[in-house]
Length: 221
Image (cartoon, rainbow, N blue to C red; front, top):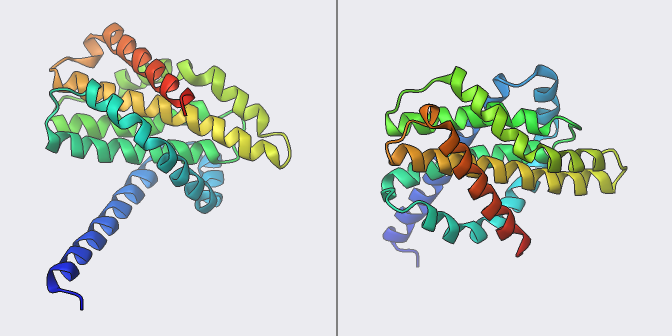
């Protein structure tokens, strides 16, 4: 016999899932509006398949990073971390979807609108002043860090059958690593009261350091 408390817990869980899905849909649609129309159309047409692959990819890799982020985010309170985690998860899932989408030679550049949307929302969580013009310049520069490895995956996408699968996996790894690192470095600096746009070198240094750690963690799989 199912107890009322169990029913309430199930209802609350279902409501949370619905809310998260709606939250992701809102984030995803906001990002698509800032992408080139042709790329957005391809991403939409392959969305169901790409999202399924992206969700499985994240499920297989998320646990490896938990301890690393705990060490990196000392001092961030649990409520703020929860809000930031949801925002960064939406961005990372979107980045993985783009990585698995059949768009050769574009993935790295398409990360920019994803990361701008993510950073804008993180700034809002901390009540900090947001400058999209400055953020766009910083984000484009940081995306270049992963461009070389991303191109490897993009070339593989031209190989029939195997290409799309192998290329997508490589691009998803690059896209999620860059996005995840950018998100949590932003959170750390905002929590420490540092102005990212006045401390670009510090920001880039922390970003590259975290990307390196994430890549090493991935290799230990």
